Image (cartoon, rainbow, N blue to C red):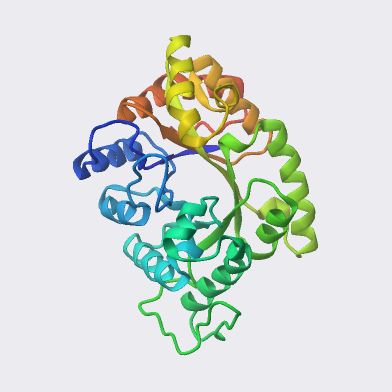
Length: 321
């Protein structure tokens, strides 16, 4: 299991976003050996949200060798043609390091702002994935659907390959897992919407859908995104962060978030990560809440060695795996 980091796009503090700070954050993540850098996607949210694809492209020169990911992007809200264009640019300029995670999104406000009926999101998502692939591949047949068509659309320059891998975000519904198996190259779970036991159960169900789709579950990658992180030895501070910051932001019970996320002392965080490794998670995407750079350094210094103690099978050659 390895570790990546989310770009800190949510305005958890009153401090305005700064490109210099984001570049420093990205450089720190690369220097500490994290495997991936990702951006999430919302138009409207309960807190200010810096645009994900724009921010990912802005820090591109500081990303080193890390994978770049969207976890997830919203092709229905943004429009698959516009998203295909921006993702192709990031993939080309990064030398082919992009993984495009997509999902329907769960915000009715995003859909209302984009003028798209929320109840159409799943049908449109299916067609959006087909549209992305058709726009990226060379000399392939165009896609024609009820909502989108690539007929006559030649979206150059294309990515250097047949297009970035597309991973599907799913919280574990049967319909979502079938979609992931049918359309995806990988699966993205959400840390605040699962537990190690639930992840194991969902992986098993996904495996059956993959086999039905003619895919090998052993070759199908996964990652757990939105693993919010705040290393602290103070239980009262951990409770305050969950109660006052995360619970209203994510619309989840504070106690549930405290149990599921990496909020608390290093030993507790390491045990949670060890449980996910045992459950078959391949990558965990960390999202520091406050003092983001210090939190990345604290994870590397105080948590990572404990995860290797808890999980003797963890690779030893990568400083963030």
